[in-house]
Image 1 (tube, rainbow, N blue to C red):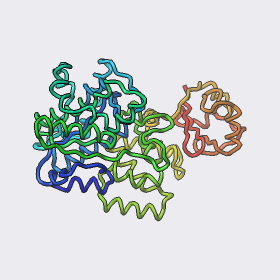
Image 2 (cartoon, rainbow, N blue to C red):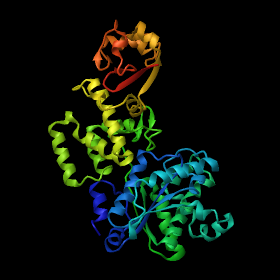
Image 3 (cartoon, helix red, strand yellow):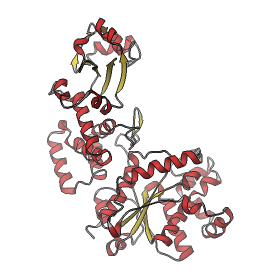
Image 4 (tube, one colour):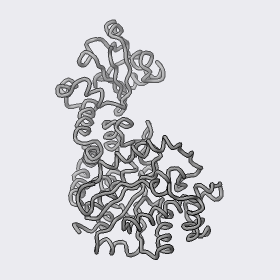
Length: 428
């Protein structure tokens, strides 16, 4: 094997629970392993990058990855980490979500590399053949209610109420492992630490039904040092789909990582080696204001998810909004207006008429009445008095008037509110 897969995950902080014998198995043979993805939306999100990266590391270490999309389990609903019963999806929505998730997974794994080519499966393809009576007779009898009730994902919900549908989820997921074990020689299941109960149910079904050996490990759930929820911003979930979260927004999510989290994230979300990361950390410690760790992290993962073009757009838009060492016009020389606006998807925008700009728009109106960027004229005045507002990156006061002289490429004005909030006025 090119490298010790488990040891690689261990130094990256990506290993939590592991079944004894798993590491030894991975060192002596090519192992087929899988991760399941829940199609609750038509796009995966940044939290999904951790199981994706597990599969990528598995393949890079010479093993065979299976990405399972839960077309069947998506109809049931996983109680793990949930405090309430989840709304079930209709078949049309579920099929749309499965297609979206499949398309995204295909960009991360190699499906044409010989012995360890990745495989993509949908558990609906085998679950649809089962009748309810057959399933509870042939699979349900191997696992006791006591065993199922002892799982943390179930135990936490027993007191508040859990439906039989969600209670049975671990049986369906457990059968997935059995099916892949019998039909594709799969010996390993991986997932987040919240999945440990469901995963070990699968190993138990394999042991009891076919007397087979099955292995598993989990990765810690990603957290933020300040206790906030990872993968969430003020505008909501950070998605992998560029139509939901633009490359610029995606890049900004990572570049705004705190120093307390950057070291952990760069280990988990990039393939940079240990020596490189430790070198970056040492340089970052010497000049933390340059944010070298965050910039490297943002570049690596944005390129992984959105390609070089998406990264270039994000870096250019970031420079236009935040680089104080060059004029906006200099930065725009290599970028068309359309490219600018598309790269800034996610930056709040508003349209005003050419006539209004020709007459002149007072900065207070430009912030509130004509654009709705701020809630009121009073808020606009407070921010202006606090020296928090810039037009095209130049600080302005309450008496400032936006005119044709402020237009970039005859069509755009950039407003900044503090260090991180930006708005775009488009003149039509």
